[in-house]
Length: 220
Image 1: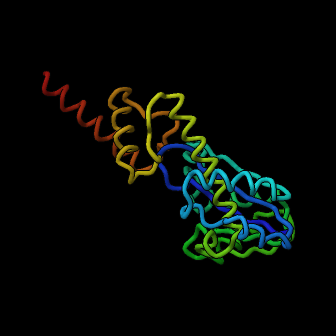
Image 2: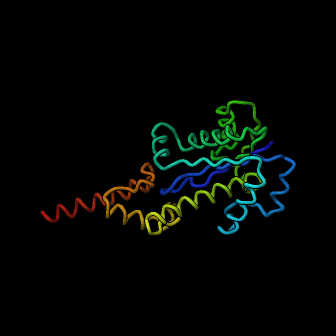
């Protein structure tokens, strides 16, 4: 049995990170290509959702780990983001228990990422860890689709609860930054679904704290 693992949401300042993995009989891997599986970033949201259902039906098992912003912030106090990724990937593998796993490396040194996962894993396993594995290996592409669809759904849930758009959650998204700045301006704090350890969050808090101090001094 083989597995593919990938994440969605490592970099955003808003929302959770999702790490997805699928377990598949190696004889069925060509079926992923047949149904049109490719890297999630190359697919439309509608196509990703369609394929996610197909992938779940085809897989022997799948597992999606959701890591909240608070969990990320707490873990970053004692470890790097790469170390967090290792723990998360290993956790997904523990649920799937494949003979061979293909993972999209989250470390600049791809082999080191795979070796660190193997050391965290409680069993014997072969790991192929490569950059752009979500493009090279359909089974990793399939995992990337599940992760992306799940994170998009969770972000949509947030927007539905708030009754407003928050954008993609990434620091480069003007809609996300606009939302975050307005929230901090209105509440003088970050929303619960923001990652407070991100520089983006710290900069926005500092910006509005500085503005408030300036206004207070002006009033005096």
